[in-house]
Image (cartoon, rainbow, N blue to C red; front, side, top):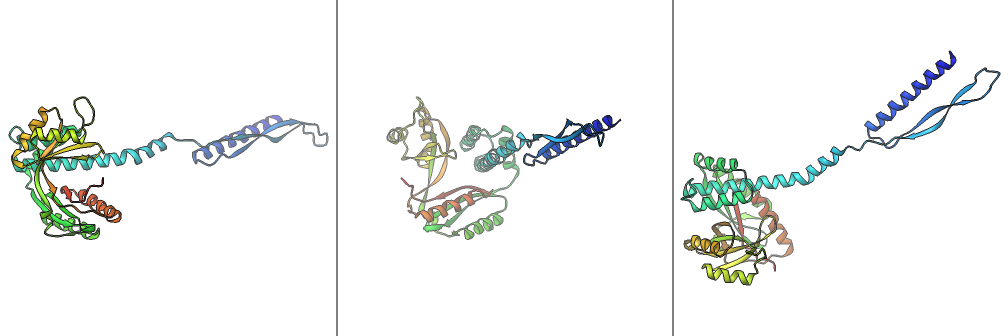
Length: 310
């Protein structure tokens, strides 16, 4: 009977040790040490006991490593910001669709600007449902186009294009963003810009090689453009912008397509006629301010006259 009782106590002890190990793993405790008893025979005539149990085995348990934690971390720090940037880009494209419908109607066959924006949406993989919803929303919702003039750090000039259904609200909120970040609404900035037609194309030629600026100038002359500039898109890829008068925008676009260049966008833009050179400190503050304004939902685009850094 003593042997059976002893055996039961050993089983109970082992069960308690196992449960303790599992609890530690579930709570992600650092490697607890568990001592298990073992039977050691010896003779003791006085007590009549022939077996004793002493701790002689040691087990190290490890905390569980949940793969889901690492996966969530990647989603949070990589996928999350990418999705947010993608949503902002689609929101800007929706505004451009609304503006194009407002100015030329909802039929892309008779509205070149709308056709260009739709091509841009498709190039950015914007869902077809979202494109159609933006076009339908533009027909049913009354929107007002406004152009705000502003100043920023270092004396830079800005033009802010806005399409909104509440002009008073947008005006106050953009004014607040400017005032809190070293800028202000100010008349006169418009004189630093000129409205031109701009055709933005992929910088890669038919052979897949990047088109050098010298070759781009030759193509500009052939297409009837006034000038060509190198720039970067949202993904920091090099693009080419061919500048022309508004009246010859469509013709320049067609000629560039005939020359084998892939059009990304084509439409009116404000090109700076006078530029300002900023210090590193003012440049950082200016970029921060422009980014904050551009993130405002009703803003179409922000133009500045910062001199490009070579």
